[in-house]
Image (cartoon, rainbow, N blue to C red; front, side, top):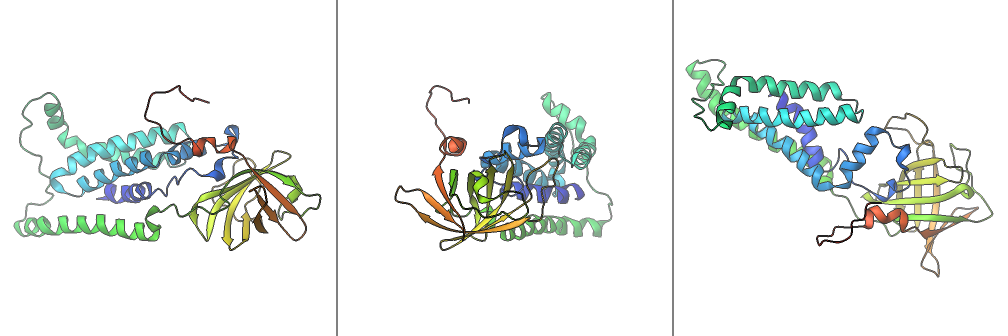
Amino acid sequence: MGLAVSLLPYAWTKIFHVQMGYADYADALVQYGEMSPMGLLWRFMAFSPTVQFLAGLAELIAVILLLFRRSAWLGALIAALDMSVVFLLNLTFDVPVKQLSGAMALVGLILLIPNVPRVVRFALGRSVGPAVSGLIWRNRIFVQITRWVSPILAIVIIIGSGLAIGISLRWGSPGTPEEISGVYTVTASSKTTPIDGTDHTTADITQIAFGQIGSRSGKRMSVRYSDGDFQDGVYSVDGQSITVELFPVRKGAQAPVRGPSGTVEFRYSTTEDGEFSLRTEDSELTLHNDDERRFLFDRGFRWGPEAPVNR
């Protein structure tokens, strides 16, 4: 039960694409060498929602099997395999929960021990023999009660947790892209507006990216400055107004949860050339589509054989 309950949050958050999220334009300005090993793993998983979903589904299947007496051994086997892979990834990509994933893999193996001989005989094509009893007490009344209570409780845990997490996370919906979602190079006017919490002004912005994923109350964005500094944040759109809440400039080992360092208010419009213009009270930025920085996100899927694009 403990292993199943521990696995559930990880299973549902992968299924609803929340643990690693989605690959988004906001990551287009992040350079390879700037990423932490964990950030690289997260972006790898986020790029393929299918892989992330299947990873969560494998964990959910283990949970379901663990919660029923007859299938608990198979759930333990799948959980041990799942968490061994997770443990290896955590080790090699320096994810902090190494000990937890290792312990969960070990618990799966311990739960599997009584059934190891049967699994080996099955693999060798031999008769597996009688099932290993999972009863901890053979009292008749206890057996009668747990025969019905345990499955009902298991169903409540699985469905209840899925509903609770799904509703709270809006079922993992990526939301609707904004009109301005994209990756851009920037031309700044001669007038400048200071950017709170930094030594930069709007004139220092050379690239800007507005993500597609999220709700109208907040989607990810990022900025690259002329001196190479990188800053990310969230933005929200209200009509033609954009509110950008920026986190501190990316430096060294920073925690994933950071408080905002400043806010910038823009008004945006479309130019005669079909480009976007961002204006503050004192400055104006003209945004030019940067197709090369969007290549990863816009490449799409191709089934037919063709020359590989490995760039």
